[in-house]
Length: 192
Figure 1: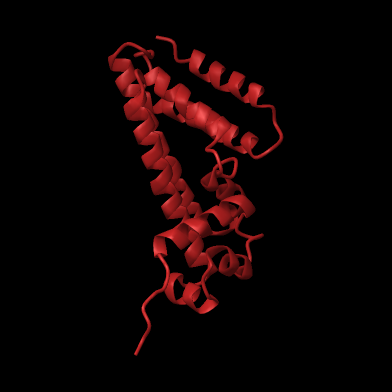
Figure 2: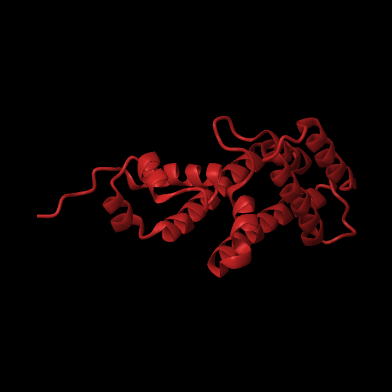
């Protein structure tokens, strides 16, 4: 008779996600995953497939989590401009207890050039973020917070490019004050 799983699949997936986020795909061994997730090697393979499949599931989970956090932050903001400022602050200062930077950006620079499936997943994540930003900017345009003479999608692409750069800088020893100046300059370009 087969034994049932003795672990919470979502909880161990989150542990794997954090390992990949902190160490990257290449530097995270299967032994690291088994130890970090607190499960047996056989359970890892039976539940998630190989390391690559687990990584893809971790990327998907990350996208869902981050998108939810961003949407919740936007919903709480007093204005579209303040929502954008909050998103920049979050990307610069991060979440307490979380690795710096962004798992998708880290993955795009580490694996996407040589892994078509990873490239597609990171591209989907970036497209989702640009759509979220375009919706936010469109709302701001309707409230006259942002210029109306430019397409929301174009402005979202520009803001997203700055956010990607900040996410890369957040992984380094770059000065946080400098990153906030970069974000402030990007927001200043959005005056109505």
